Image (tube, rainbow, N blue to C red):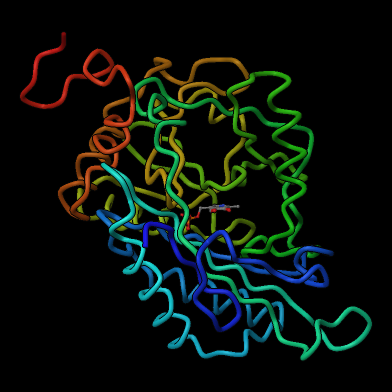
Length: 315
Ligand SMILES: Cc1ncc(COP(=O)(O)O)c(C=O)c1O
């Protein structure tokens, strides 16, 4: 079969036949949690860490998936393995877990089971590959991070309208920008779908883990920095510090580490990806065993002109 399969509520089905109920409360009210795990050369990367966070989100939201974490892991590995041959050249997957609530009562799905969906989605490397060379842009919108006493950002929930609104606003300033959300006191928190780091005098700084999603890639980056002897601290900082940083970058499962070259229309440091980010990218390839920059660049139509492959000359 050359169609990817997905897991939906106990069944493995072709992706085109994967459907959920209109009564699902994730769909209706955003009452759901999710995870995104990447594959590297088809194999799941840090699945245990993602499933631990999924379990924590389920616990906090009291959503019962109706299956054990061991079973979720077994199904995830099965879905990823079955779809692995369909990745395409230099392709990889973002593996999605979406689990939404169906409390008994008014809008319960017959049987009252939670919706559990596990699927693979090709990572759109081409759409962001160039940012590894030029750096991505961030803009701070007026929309603030969800306060901990409203929706604790440590939970990975499907309630993401604040990020969406932040993106619309940020892109009025810079059409390429990802919104970088501040808290109500002006401290930098995180981006829609990414954690944020700055580099100052050789030290990495990233916001503390209280009011952000504690990214699996953020952890992987802090571990990597330690192995490479790059000092790192979790500390509060503001836009002032970003504008005066030497370098900045974001981290997320699908992009791993991506340099960030502009904030609010102004260059950060030299306005180009810097040496510390480059060291982390190279260290990642050596220590974690896959070169995410090379992989993304191979999706560019003008790959050789953009940055020649090692050992090849630009034409
Ligand atoms: C709000 C938010 N912050 C940070 C991240 C990065 O987390 P991870 O590195 O686990 O992908 C994500 C990932 O989707 C996210 O949604």
